[in-house]
Image (tube, one colour):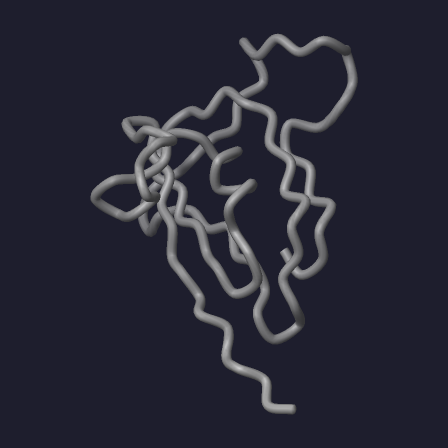
Amino acid sequence: MVSLPIEAVNYYVAVTGNDSNPGTETQPWRTISKAAATLSAGDSVYIRGGIYQERVTFAGSGTATAPIKILAYPGETPIIDGNNYTIATNWGALLYLSGDYV
């Protein structure tokens, strides 16, 4: 059986984006959560600078040869800020990675 190569995709998130966008560099998503729900093995997400007030869970998995990559956009600093984020409980992480090879 021949394995086909995984088609890796680069996605983008920006505070000026919209989650109904396709996640491209010129039409980024608004939330990191949208990226977390979309990425699969081999994909990368570049997060633009800005403050993201959200709770994010990456549950998907990459593989040893095709990991999922979460990266800051070159030269920019994204921040996940829980200071003004209201959640139903007083516990839990703002960024939770439960998948493998992320």
